[in-house]
Amino acid sequence: MQRLCDRCGMRPAAVFQPHSGKALCSECFFDDITARVKREVERWRMIEPGDVVLLALSGGKDGYTLLDVMSRIYKPDRLIGLNIVEGIHGYNKEEDAGYLVKTAKELGVDVIVTSIKEYVGFSVDEIMAKARDASSRISACTYCGISRRRIMNYYARELGVNKLATAHNLDDESQTAVINILRGDLQSLLRQHPLAELVKDPMLVRRIKPLRKIYEWETATFTMLKGYHIQETECPYIYQLPTLRAKVRRELYKYESEHPGSLLAFMESLDRLLEPLASKVTPKSGLGRCVRCGEPTANGKALCKLCELLEGVGITRPLYAVRKLKVVAR
Image 1 (tube, rainbow, N blue to C red):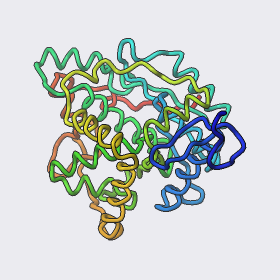
Image 2: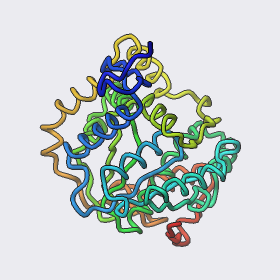
Image 3: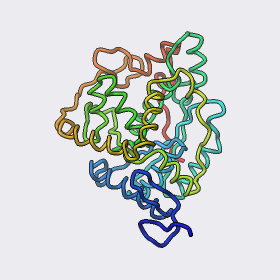
Image 4: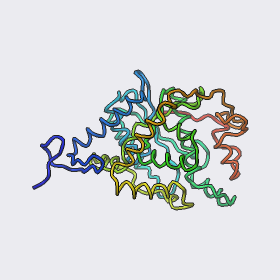
């Protein structure tokens, strides 16, 4: 006889949550994810009444979960989606972006599709080709991640939104926290707390992470049960220049499998530990401006991090530095 849902007791169980020890039907699982995200958003006041929020949507499991849940707990007409095509052969597919736009539209959310090449003038593949020529040991993830963060903030600012929501999940956040602890980087660890605002600048839009207490396997299960067409191809650069994150990820997954709920307990404890500091921190203001592109940069630095990285591979006139990109929603 098939096991019934531990919550409603009526429908067949479809998902087992190791951290809660409960078997849930699809509907109760959806409700659980939605309620936990809503609780996290409200607990830390991530969104204020009237806010317009830009959703960073990759087209993967985390992005679809963010899109679906946010359209349920917040007004869809106050949400805008942003999809950034990295330009990685075999990884990015035009139909994936098209499906994302269509799905978001059905949920009442307009999506803007752009690319790293459209902003920088070079795709990730093209940047990495230049990096190889320059004998650079910087990983593709660094070029890609910093480019994506810049583009997200640029669109958020140009659109005049109040918050920028990324789809970082519990696994992402716990890995980052461990890395920050191992490096002794208290400032970056504190920055992870939802209340912490370490830097305030009119050109920077406040970021929020609604999925920070949702496991990665839960976002994968959520999208599968919903029937969303996600981008399934793994990035080919992930196994090149193995990072500290890859090592931390492996060990955390092993520990979580042996002790279900450990990652959730870790992040909850960290939140409580950092809250007194995060709630009282005075944000730094008066950032400098990059002499090349005019974007914010650390005081005393002539170039912003993106311009500095690109200069290292011979790109001294990126497109974003010589012309303004149009922002148009589909």
